Length: 131
Image 1 (cartoon, rainbow, N blue to C red):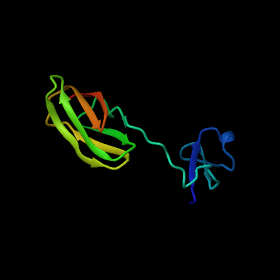
Image 2 (cartoon, one colour):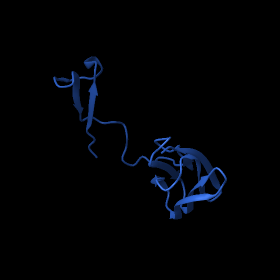
Image 3 (cartoon, rainbow, N blue to C red):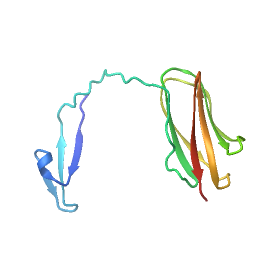
Image 4 (cartoon, rainbow, N blue to C red):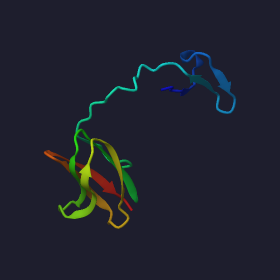
């Protein structure tokens, strides 16, 4: 696998073989060397639920999570009284990293919680919707 990196820096002393970009005042370097990352490298996944972004949001936000094993997964949004406001995921998923867009335009402004359940794993985070 060939990996080509483009590096843009303000100080040309940190990167070799640079050329000045008159439009931006930055220096550009395209490096075609090895990175030390092997194609066969396997990254160890664990259960993880990320904080949504942006937060606060209007009207949509992104929620990311990762799974180390396959299984049934649910990702739900609840209001502050614990009432279910939305079901974002309710299906079997394979191991991997996932991203879900949540559109809250049908909700009123306020604090909500989202919960990921996968096997024995359960995690909850807070999100804020501002209209």
